[in-house]
Length: 381
Image (cartoon, rainbow, N blue to C red):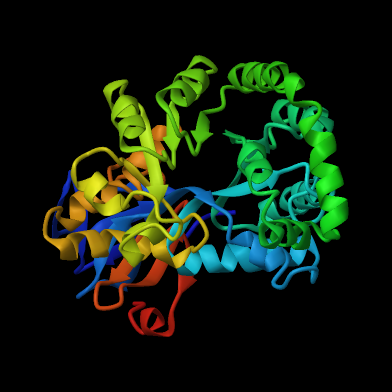
C-alpha cells in the first residue's frame, strides 16, 4: 500500500545531538527530503524526536491478567498493549515475556498463547513489536519451546533470568511464600513442593543455559543478563555472549560492563520516582556518570517518555543527551542501525512531544501516522 508522505514543520527537532528548529519529512517509510504533495503537520511548540526504543517492558502482563487469577485473551491483551505503547511514543518495543517454571501468568501455556497472538497481530500493528524472552534458568521443561521459537524467529532478544535462588532464600517467610503461591495460583504447600522439585534439578541449569546461548548466537540475537549481583555473574553471562548488562545490582558490576564497552540498562521508573522501588541503586546519577546507557520502561510504559525530561530537570544532562538513553542507545544495543536518530534514510519513527506534559501528541511508525491526540488532529494541514 502506498504511504502518504509527510512534512513536519515548525518544530524543534533533535538532529545530530542537538535540538534546533528544523523541518522533518517522511516518505516511503523513512526520513527523507521534502517530497512533493506531502501532507503537513504543524509542530510549532513541539519537540520532534526519534521514536522511543524499549528493550524491556513487561506492563503487558497487566493486560493479560489485570487482577491475580483474572485473565483475558492474549489477542485482546496485545491490542491493548500496542495502543498503550503508541500513546507513550514507543515505536519499537521488546515485550519482556518471562518464561518461568511457575504456573499461571508466566507459564509455558501463557507463552504459547502470547506467541500465537503476536503472530496473528503483527501484520496489523503500526509499531515494531518484538519479544524479549526472559528465560528462567530452572525452566528446563520449557527449553525445547524456547529453542524452537528462537530458531523460528519469534524471539528477538534473549535475557538470562535466574530468580530461583532468591525465591528459595525466602521460603522461610510465610508472607513471601503466600505471595509467590498467589502469583502462581497455588496453595502455599503446593508452591513449596513445586520449588522443591525445581531445585532438585539445579545441576542441569548450566547445560541448558549453554544451549540457549548457542541457539541465540546462531540466530544473531542480542543477549543480556539480568540482575547481575557480582563481577562473577557478569563474567559468566559475558562468556555466553551477553553484551548487555540489565539492572545490575551493584555499581561495580555496571562499572565493569562499561569498561568492556557493554550497554547497561536500568529502569525509567527508577529515574521518574527518584530511586528503585526495591531499594537498589538510583539510576539517574549513574546515567549522569555514564554508567547507565539505556533506560527501559520495565513495569510502566509512560515512564520511558517522562524519564529524559526528569533527567534534564536535574540539570546535569541536557534533553538531547538524555533522549539518547531511550532511543539511540537502546537501538544500538539491540543492533538496530536503522532507527534512533532523525537522519535521511533512517526508519521513519518519529514522536512529536508537547514538553509541557510531556505528552506524545503524534507518533509516526515506519513513516505512517500511528497515534494522534485531539490536540494533534487540530495541527493537520
